[in-house]
Amino acid sequence: MRVRVRRASHLGADVLAPGDKSISHRTLLFGALGTTPMQVRNLAPGADVRSTGSCLRALGVSIAEGEVPGALSVRGVGPGGFRPPATVLDCGNSGTTMRLLLGLVAGARVACTLDGDASLRRRPMRRVLAPLRAMGARMDGEEGAEDEGAPLRVEPVSTLRGMAHRLPIASAQVKSALVLAGLAADGQTRVREPEPSRDHTERMLGAWGAPVRVEEGEVVTTRLLRPLSLPGSLEVPGDPSSAAFWIGAGLLVPGSAVVVRGVDVNPTRTGFLAVLERMGARVELEPEPSRAGDPVATLRVRGGQALRATEIRPAEVPSVLDEIPLLAVVASQASGETRVSGARELRVKESDRLRQLVLGLRTMGADIDELDDGFVLRGPVRLRAAGIDAAHDHRIAMSFAIAGLVADGETEVEGAEWADISYPGFFRELGAATGQSLEVPP
Picture 1 (cartoon, rainbow, N blue to C red):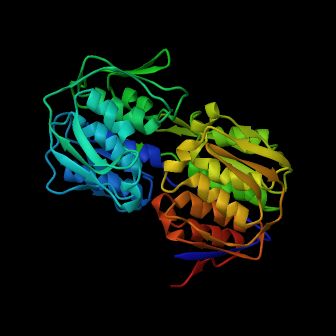
Picture 2 (cartoon, rainbow, N blue to C red):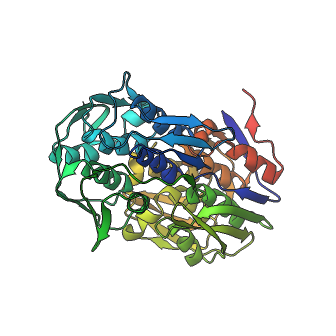
């Protein structure tokens, strides 16, 4: 699908943030470790979370769709209750599904194969496979030139052994996989990261009765001996990474007024707001009742604010990793030199995001240099329209649509359908907010 975006003369939006993708994955995965029904509302609508649900159904978990979008019922099988799947566990395009599921099945005593689309098969999996194998898991992937990738084969083992892990880079996905494996392991499993990553796994599991705690910067896990105590109902808070596109657009389009409601403002997820504040942006937060154990707020922003450049250093990257492409677009309109370092992880996302954002912004006239682990961008610059390839990456597709709102001419984004991975309907909502018809008929 192609979308065409023109410079926006106005932007007015009052939107409800779609359900958070990270919490939605974990709601389903952790729900599988309970045995009582849980009613879920505002589940993330994208294809990635649907992949997690499909894999869990194949393992025997009951997941029934509700009458309204984002509503469903989950009834798990408890620890040790998974059945061997009759088919390959298809993780689609979702790295979160594949990596967390590896932790869940590592000690589940079931044989299975995890696979995904061509993009997911290129994603590195040794970072999860190696520490799980060190705990006694029997699993292997396809050997590549530099790493292992899907399809991944898992064989049953009688038990896992707990151990201490020191992750070389902060990764909520790897941490979560090891915590889930620790729930099926003898002894303690301890995970330490160089910098904090998003903490939904330890928050949710701890709240639901799992033997998981944070101790002096380490996540400590022991064997789960009984089903999790699931809440009868849970409303997923809005995704801050999806909300970021609206906040970025609101800052860039002069005279805009943007309101995003129901946004998760967990401190490990709001790094992009801290970066914007350093850049001189004023984003108002109005507290709402908490959801799923996380603080929630309505975000408000107006356009026409003067922005200044900033630096994002390695220690800050885990809190802004998903938002860096959008922040690069915002930085193109800020005065001075913006530098990002320590973000090499972006090269192994759905695309090489560093390469794609540098190529795209350079094509649109930005003064940007690519680094091995980031970029240097000098602004402000008047962007010009260009043809952009989304490269099978939802965040690239949406980020360059925002860039098109402040570019001369008509920017065309090819592969816009990849936005459905995390935010179905994004381009329809953006078109309504700007008075544009964005989607190009096939």
